[in-house]
Image (cartoon, rainbow, N blue to C red; front, side, top):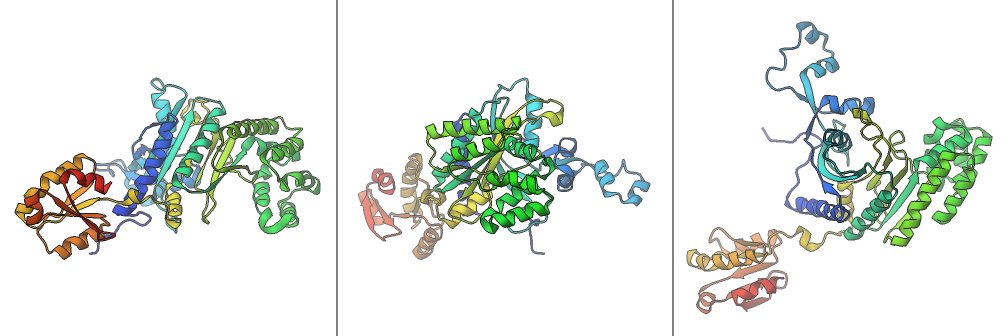
Amino acid sequence: MKPNIPKGTRDFGPIEMAKRNYIFNTIREVYALYGFQQIETPAMETLQTLMGKYGEEGDKLLFKVLNSGDFLTKVTDQELEERNSLHLAAKLCEKGLRYDLTVPFARYVVMHREELQMPFKRYQIQPVWRADRPQKGRYREFYQCDADVVGSDSLLNEVELMQIVDTVFARFGIRVQIKINNRKILSGIAEVIGAAEKIVDITVAIDKLDKIGIDNVNAELREDGLSDEQIEKLQPIIALNGTNDEKLSTIADVLKGSETGLKGVEELRYILDILKGVGLKNEIQLDLTLARGLNYYTGAIFEVKALDVQIGSITGGGRYDNLTGIFGMPGLSGVGISFGADRIYDVLNQLDLYPKDSVASTQVLFVNFGERETAYCLPIAHHLREQGIRTEIFPEAAKMKKQLAYANAKLIPFVALAGDNEMQQGLITLRNMATGEQQLLLPADIANAIK
C-alpha cells in the first residue's frame, strides 16, 4: 500500500522549510525588537477549554482526541446503540487539538496571572488544527504567528503594532497597504441611523462601491431593509474620500450624536497622528468597510493588503475588551495581530523576494578522491565550519561527475578539490560552480573567498 498523509495537511521539503524559517525568523526578530516574549502552549487542550469559545460552527471543527486506555468502559450499550455522536464524543474524548492561539493564550494568562508582569507582551508561532473541508489555500493544519499585549488600554500599543507590521513587510520587501478602522465608529454609525443589527450589511454594501457604483450600493442598502432617510444619512460616509484627516472630519460630523462613535474617531486620530511622526514606509489608510470579527473586537481593527499580488488579507488584528472573561477573569483588555504565514509565503514566492542566502544550504562541497585526500580535507572542512561556513564532504569516492551533479542539485555555489598537486603544496583548488572559475588557495583564505 502506498503511504499517504491526511487530507488538508502538507509535507515541507528542505527549500520550503528554508523559506518558512526565513518568514518566521524575520517576524520573530521584529517582535523581539519591541519587547515581545515568546511562549508556547500544548498542541492539545482540554475540551473544556476549547468548547463553546468559537460558536457552534467552531465546535464542529474541533479535532477531538480519544481518551487513552480502554475508552469504552464508561459507555453503556444503550448509549452505543443511540449513536449520538456528540454525546459519545463528550464521554470518549477529554482533549482536543487547539483551533487557534487566542483561547490557549487566554487560558495561559488566567493560569499564570500571579507570575506575569503586566502589561504582558507575548508572541506565539505554532500550528493550529481545524476539521474543515480542505480546499485551495485552506488547510486542516496551518501555522499562526500571533502577538498580543494584554493588561494595558494605552493606544501606544496599537501604534507599536502598526510599526511592527510596517517593519516586517519592509524587511520582506513586500509593498503593502495597512487598513485601519475602529469598531466604535461602526457602532456609532449604526446608532446614528438607528440600525444596530444592520451594520454588517452596511459595511458589505459600502465595500462594493468601487465595483458597482454609488447608485447600486444604495439599491443594495434598500434591499437590506434600510429606509430612504437612513440611506440619506449614510451618503457622506459611502462617498468618503480624501486624506485620513479629511475622512475623520467627515465621519465626526456624521457621528455628532453618538458618544461611542466620536470616541472611535478620537482613538483613530490619536493613532494616525503619532504614526505621522514616526514615519511609516507603507501607506496606512482609514477604511470604513473594514469590519473584522464583529462580536470580538471592540476598538481599533487592522488589516494588511499586498499591493503587487492578488490575494486576501495577509495580516489582521485589533483591540478586544475581554480576553480572559471566558475563563471567569473579566476586564482584561488587549490588542493583537496575526501574520498569515501561508499567504506571505505565496506572496514572497510570486514576487521572487527570498534573499539568496535564506534558501541556500551548503556553501562548499569537498570532492572525495579517496582516503588520503579525505584525511587532508577533513581538518580544513572542520576549520571552515568553525568560521561559520556551511561545509560538506562527499561521503564516497564516487565519480567526479556524480559529485558535481550532487553539488548542482543542491545549489552549492563552491566545490573544493585536493589532489596530489594541491596536497604537496598545502593548497586547495576552489571552483565557483556558477562561473566555472578556479582559484588555488591557502586553506586559511578559503572562507574569505566564499564570503
